[in-house]
Length: 599
Image (cartoon, rainbow, N blue to C red; front, side, top):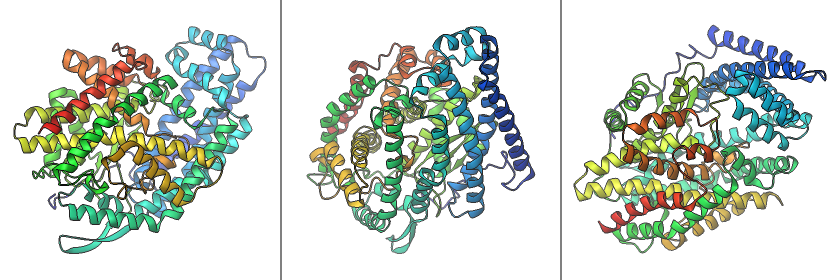
């Protein structure tokens, strides 16, 4: 990568600054909306409400919450833009802490509304939906609130759980974020030794020279060893709280709430996982072939992301922009134009720097109908794919904004949240594979794509096994860092088999992944596999239908908060409870493996 300036995102069109009058005015408005909503919801407590008044209050409650979610969500995202890019910013951290208490009031409003919906009969709810347009437009949301209300503790305990989360699970999450973002270690590269933040060090995993990859891996392992105790405490705190709350709420097991949040049935997950397990031998053949190319019998962990060709293609930021816009345009001019706006209006924070969180994400900005994207750009093809992925999330948001969906209606499950992102990755890769004629370049592109797909199928499966086992063990006692490490090694051996050297795995893969530290979002791993395979299936339909597909695809993205995954998939005549679909998507990947192995 050249020394060109890599962008930081611009959030000044949201508020000039955290201490600006505009921010304070919005905060005061939000507090007023919360107070007004609290007064409205007190009317729900009346015992003499007839069906007409119930319907009126229900519609008013939906509208009030939508307005609060829009304003509160925008302010929350704005503060998040500071805390994720500079964990040393104490002023922003304090403002975020103050806002968390306000957001707690919003959570409690949502809780009170759901409790009231839960006490209403299905007959009453259906009558509201029939009688009022707002209720009808939010029919799915009302039915879902009713269904999930059976897993609520008594209201006072749910309020207490929300309040305790500020100094409990959310505090553990902040600790993980602070420790991992502020950890920098010395590393020698190109004859110069300097301190590298962990995201930058991790990015060396794709360096073409094995010596660099191996030394970076060894340095990374030592670095995580130095902070494994506080991170293990954070993981225990989050998972222990989740176990307790799941038991109190009557959940069958740890994955139960994740399935409901994903809006899929357990059968869907089980069928998908079965197909994934059956595909593991094909991926293991890919790993062994890759090992053979570099003169090994098995891959070491530091070789998983190694480029497969001496053609070490790197990209400047401007090349990345042009590359993505060109290939997005081959799918849809609208997608390309949208991505151009994201680049030109500085929606992307791509610079690697101390204090910034690792990984990548996209967040919507309600109220502004925009998005912001965080990544850690290093010029690699992998990072180009990451940016395409996150732009897909932003386009997903855009489709909902264009359709004027409310905040309730935009409540997308984590399974379908990955649809547009992986579709955008697929668009870029498919275009590259079609254009590339040179064998060495084809191997580089195909290899890079298989690195990503193997992560989503093989590594995600290992992480699913890991989290399942962690929850089981945490029910009995706290886990030491060594026990957590051993559990991760067990999961990796089960997923990767003999393709990876057993002495050179990554026992610390649990440390830097923030998903494990979200108390309200367990098992944020299988949704990525769902998203990959669902998007693969949709892309095959796109190839058959061409431009006619785009309108239906945009409508799907706009509607992901308004139906279950099974129902939305059926719009494209896809049965996600059938192995036929999952096996078909995986077959497309195994064809890529076969081509890779033949080169």
